[in-house]
Image (tube, rainbow, N blue to C red):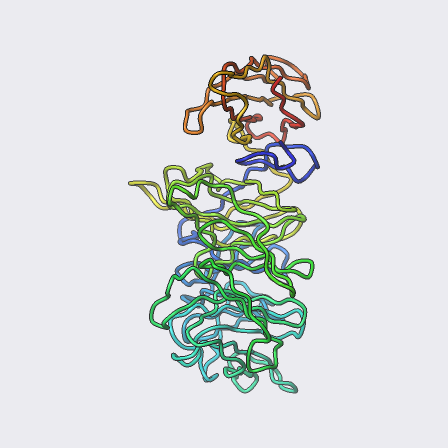
Length: 482
């Protein structure tokens, strides 16, 4: 089951060791203390270029913060300074509606913003997506600049002048660099090769039109029109990350993941939910960067308002999808609303993401979650894999299996356990076949459970646990019905 031959998963790592499934790491929550708390959903993260302990984030209330990860201290940088942020050269850039803010990252300790004004205007209450280009060193800013036309602008320092954020003569903002096609508004920016790639949705410039279509424009940074465009029949695609000379994009309501190259666009995977129920998932609302690349796999933040679960962090490699992390308190989104905001790979050992939990009839909480590869594992049988739902017999020739066997890649260790469940119909509750753990069975690597009898169809679920505050995990190699 570790090779992707499963229908659903939760809190499982199938990528770290090929062919082996195991319990994943437990995200650690940071919410802050009184007067220093996370007060809305964090939607974007950036890394400080000078201090390895500092990351920046903005939230849905359009506030910008610095987060000292060594002291777990969050400091608001000014008030209402931006819902889009980017570290560029030595500066943290923030954009909100009609202003651009900049602050020098060097020595930043909660410091103050300089507002860049008089730049032929960022205008209107729109998301102004930012791309810091690795190709030409420029900042590209998308969307409304005149209240009538959506555009791409570039922000550059004026050559030969000593840069000061508050001195507008040292900035150049080319607000007429490139106009988007009429009534199309940017939902994301990235780059591939020599092209800036703009994801766009259709709008009347007063309200968005949720037509099932996303257009991707390829701009060579100098022409007055797109060099070429691609269209996908799905609304809301805008979460984009670049890797290996290709782009990966998602964000629609059906959990589809696409790859974009200079030769075209292709669907490569879909997050496994029951979309026929009429429900939809959320992958990054407007302005949220809920996608990144971590340890040779794509990681995606998936929210749910409709009881589709598990919400949390999914990952993909080579077309195989796996649910890796719930938000820190373990709520899977089956009852309450769970929102995942920004996602950021800080290094090979740390992943950060923003979360929001709305309890039905109760409180709303927010926070930042940190995943560490040196952390503890999920306990209490909250990690599982479900097989596909397989036809194995017929109404007049039902099938029986005498045993269900589980093969481990190493013997059970302290605190570890495996539980097997099954069901005969897709909407049935699960029936438990049995549980085997280290305390009862010892350091065994071959587990045998009672059989499943007289079935036309069958689906199997394998649940894993470890001890509280433990880094142990069972190593699942294979599950057999014999």
